[in-house]
Length: 253
Length: 253
Image (cartoon, rainbow over all chains, first blue to last red; front, top):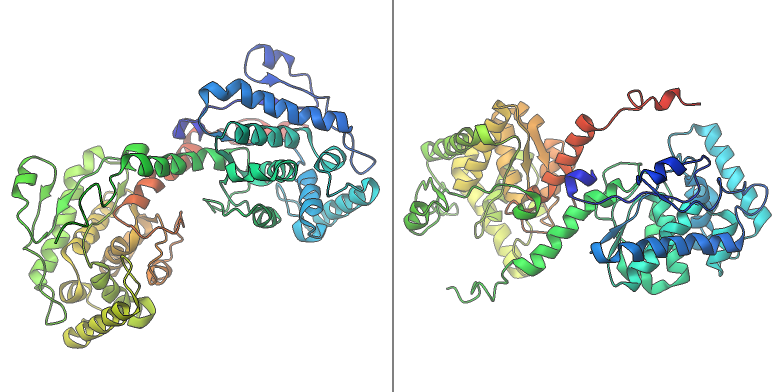
């Protein structure tokens, strides 16, 4: 999709639970591993507050390193089970009940859905994340990649550049960025509405209407890549197309 | 928008009420003028049945002339007041009341809307188009361009190529194509849902869900051009991306 839309892809390892140093040395990914996976949020905080800050700083640094070559950022994620922390984040930050915002991720059945809901409720009861403190939420029930995405959004906003946010996990990152600096949401363009329930609650919290609604549940930046071409076309309409006045349309009989 | 999405544009004069022969000689448009505008459908048939056939043949010929260089067609239109015949067509072919499917076109006020509705009702009462005879509908309450679009859709289907249909007027052409040859609808991809009321009735009649819903009311092929990039990306997903099986994902522990 990036190829089709002429989008450059940068892959950052925020904490894959495997040694990817060879892939990083080959230049295929940027190694920003915080650790080999987070801790289990159902048994305690997913990470320390220091690590939560570190994830956001990584996102900022990646965005700043790319600043000279990027006019518009997009976010994506890849991870197993990362709708679970994202759901915890949306529940805490929007005040929706866990049951209302918990979806089927990659396609779990009813029993697994009940289990997922119960795990999230347990993690929230155990960790008591403070909704008024985004870093506390990040640390206690977030994944590393969500912090990286939040940091990238903050940096994009600081650079006055739009950032196309796609998918459920990325939008969890956007909620964190918004909680830390509400004005950053002005730079967010919502790309795609995921099939994942809870995504609507996120968009409504951020005041965003996604450009696309194609029954996809992928995330991974795919919707961001697709939306890039729509956004580029919008920009070209503003810059390249004559107005009625310029084209003397209103002067015609 | 065509530039952004790498789409080629072919402009066909189906019946502009002005001499465009110089523009045609300069190669900027294809001259297929049926006549200098249709007749007034509020006073009689918009055109003869022979002219209605001719408009469809023009669309077929244009599509066939382009066959070697086109993998996917898109439709668009430009014309003043052409939501009016399109509304008449949707009312006849879907059985909806005129009031239900008449919209504000380029932005008319309440009084003009009432007038537009009354004109369409008058044209239908006067001409009595036969809903079971698409050519009769075409001739009595259609514009030339709508026939051209219908013909292009029929030819695209005959070439087994998708045709991206955008906007209210183009979709009126799709209704005609569908009425003449229902299977042609299988080749239609609905690009964009217009703000024009009545467009939903068209899509529902054709069994289509538009890819985009961006609060635009332009038509003119803009949504078709935008949708091209989404469709190309879908095709590339099918052809270029490894399946889980090919990538041995399901064999991982």
